[in-house]
Amino acid sequence: QVQLVESGGGLVQAGGSLRLSCLASVLTPAYAMGWFRQAPGKEREFVATIDRSGTFTNYATSVKGRFTISRDNAQNTVYLQMKSLRPEDTAIYYCALDRRLGSPSTIRSDYDSWGQGTQVTVSS
Image 1 (cartoon, rainbow, N blue to C red):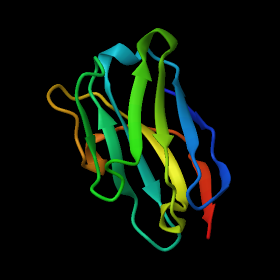
Image 2 (cartoon, helix red, strand yellow):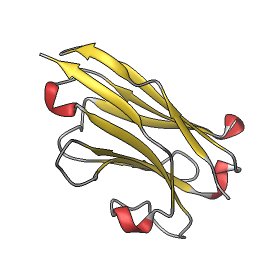
Image 3 (cartoon, helix red, strand yellow):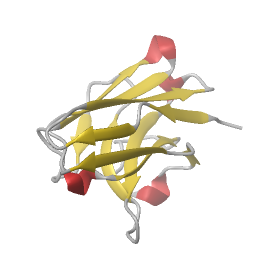
């Protein structure tokens, strides 16, 4: 059973920054990893993904240029650095693991292990 534990969420003013971490109980070099978020009353949506080596990344249009996904395979940890935060970034942020071979996915159903989420609240 894979366990993913997110941390780093909190309350921040608009324009501020936060860094989320996701610690995995398995050797993450074997898997692509992603971040998703879910705001109240909305569907869970893709935020960012990173391939096994950390060479390839992909972002949702709404966060491109403001968020950066990275990984430290030696620490089995994936990060999401968030800058220039906006009130619309308020959501629960989830880390996810993708066991498939091939390019990292933006599709929620391609990820089969999820963390419990960490709350990010951006005040205006």
